[in-house]
Amino acid sequence: MDMKTLRRQARERMNGACRVCPQCDGKACAGELPGMGGIRTGASFRANVSALEKICLKMRLIHEVRAPETACEVLGLSLSMPVLIAPLAGTTFNMGNGLPEERFAQVVTEGARSAGTISCTGDGTSEVFGSGLNAVQAAEGWGIPVIKPWAGEAFFERLERAAQAGCLVVGMDIDTAAITALAKSKRPVSPKSRAELSAIVEKAHALGLKFLLKGVLSVEDALAAEECGCDAIVVSNHGGRAFEAVPGTAAALPAIAQSVRRMTVLVDGGVRAGADVLKMLALGAAAVLIGRPAIIAAMGGEEEGVRMLLTRMQRQLEESMLLTGCASVREAGPHLLA
View 1 (cartoon, rainbow, N blue to C red):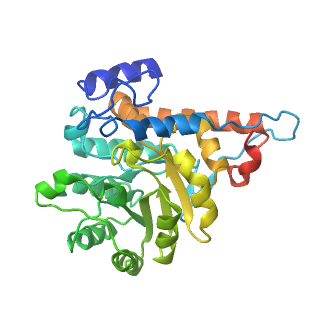
View 2: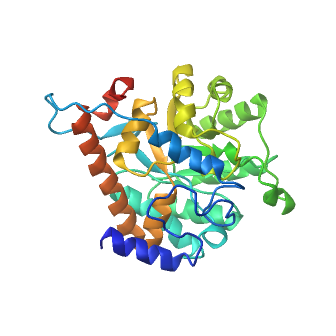
């Protein structure tokens, strides 16, 4: 399968939910929710792409690097590259029902695993969350279940279900804390106080899990997350799908990465190619998460498509490292920036 075939099949399967544009920048799909677009004006989706485009790398070709090393360790997980798949779910609601929820979760989980990296799984209804957990369990715990910030005991119930799936890391996408549709369906989500977040992290650790908080976009929240014991954060605006009046993640990342001392810092938003991965590492991230490209790959080529996407990104990352004189992703830093 080639990328042209994959993209054509994804467009057909997604039934208009995604145009599979040549450049995925949020312009054509602004406000298309349900669907794959950014919320309201789509400004924060576009900001993710434009903020990353403004970052330039310093080309250096007089050096000794010949075989760049992309392998890394993130939260105790040995990965072939610093690229994870973001928590993705809601195939009926957002993806044109191109694949059944259970099958989609299997595809992204196994596709990432076959490429030597790992996928998060998403949340929503109990059935949607269960589909992700089933995929993680079938992969012998190789996945990161990410739970919505449910109010009350609902979060803790899902946390325990995640632990039973055998995973090593669990997360919460706090950037979904204002989804009114969930409240209307009597499944409310909410922001978390320091006390609430600390209790969640304490429970995760008691279950033997490391805890990742996705949806941090300010130094203040990063410091609060560290104070509450989080093992990692994801600098994220939920792919521009939560709040239109925020900056792109590449703009927010440096100050956040510089402010924390202990936590692992990951980032998502606008990452489309290997050069984008290296830019984010240079800005301070330990790894990136990809969302929309993984959905298109899964819809267009299932496991093979996901593996092909990740393998191509790894190859592009290696090329970018050669062109900047970066021997290992562990050595990436601000010195790579032009």
